Figure 1: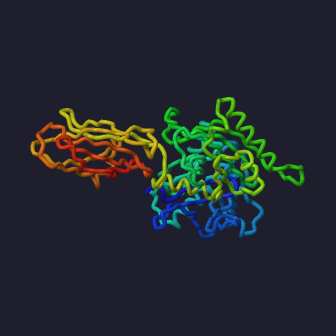
Figure 2 (figure 1 turned 90 degrees about the vertical axis):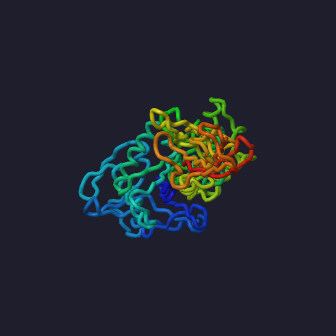
Figure 3 (figure 1 turned 30 degrees about the vertical axis):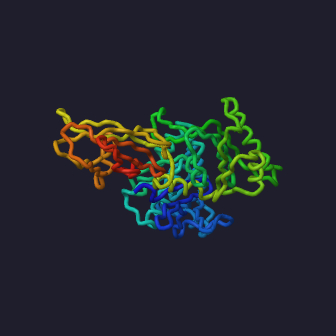
Length: 428
């Protein structure tokens, strides 16, 4: 089931999160041996250091906290995420053979998936949600490269189903910002060695051939964090310059700070002096910095679980009806619609199939594919029987925050409401 496990693979730390049904919230996952409680974070936030160490054989490796506790210094590899995002291949001897940095990253992520999956008791058919780094969201070739690599890591771990969630989208939701279509906001991500910022626009990205995209990166900038004592480097000033660069780039396209709906701050190295820069630059604009390390993973868990969230429909849905030539489909809800919707997004009329019919089943189909509510169809009953072909019921539908089609139905003859705000099918 989607939303069982969401992973935010970062260059410094990797966070796994899951939707906890009992508490109705997303929580970070403690994976014995490889994650650890993070000091300075909200109580109960766990993360795995993004590093891997190999033994004498390539399949003999330690990951995350195992590496730290082993005290091993030889054969330890880091900067794994950057290797994948940039696409640069560097080969090193590891486990008795030459491996590329991207192969090492794949081994690391596959181990995290496998151990986290065991902790949650997931089967190989479970859907895994992964965040796509901000830099990869800024480049379609990088997005595709990251997806190909990640698909390989998921399969190596023994799983088959993958769902991608853009980091800016997940981070906003996990930090408490409810993004709506057309909203513009800035995401700042801070790690121990790297900082990046971007202005993003919440908009359907179906035009690029992918129905996985929820945001468009308007402007982006990044930089390394050097040793401030050795080089006289001042991280707060560098962050301010980085953000101003993002604003300048966006300004050339007609986007200004005055139009921002909020600022989201995430990462493993969000310090007070860096936050002070953000608050000074964006006085009067809502700033979301809640649980900065866990926000992205938890946001992905919430969004892919399909509970009290928001997003865009990834498929079109409709009704199936029988004609002389066989079954035909009529689209009633289009791909790319944002949920929750503002009012009704679908309307259709039901006709009787035979004389005397009073009960009607509303079955919603992903176009020409599966029925979304076959096991629990919405049944509508009229007061009086209808004649074959008679228009009997008008149905209007909206989308709630869980991506469900919620319907209200009216009997045409009497005008009576025979169903009011009933969830007919879950579409995400």
